[in-house]
Image 1: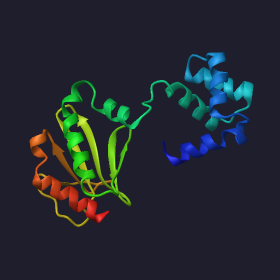
Image 2: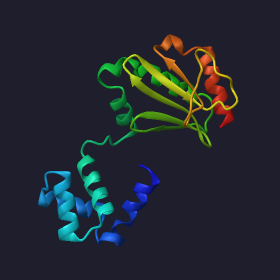
Image 3: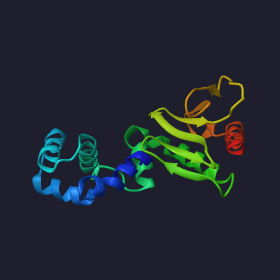
Image 4: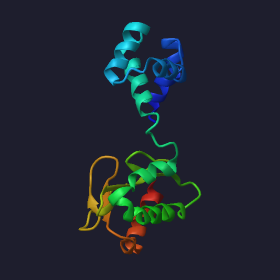
Length: 180
């Protein structure tokens, strides 16, 4: 959960008079059905501002479907047709952990962030055919395999199978770790 959402949840009692769990009880007894109906209920009957009403409804509607652990987040990413690529993710994460005791593995909804003092790599599965390893390698020239990218990672490498987690790729992972 991002810090802004957490701050809003922390501020719910002061801003609305109830905690998130207390709002869940209100909504469960009212059974609003849709997001819009719940928004209307919270805003008109309880005087909740639109921003907080939207937060409450979004959290309420996703509470049962949201993965509850890091393992469930990764399981959800590698389900269905993408399941065959899970060993690639597991190998990349294991290799990162071997780099040092300071590696933090932080699964998110769409990827697994590998951090030290800052993120140095990101493991994602954009299709059933490949895992994409994003790396922060500022100043490193791109190659046919190590493609330059924008955003959170400066480079990406597509990995279609365990045999592609080779010394070259592990060297790039180490260099990203050392630069973090």
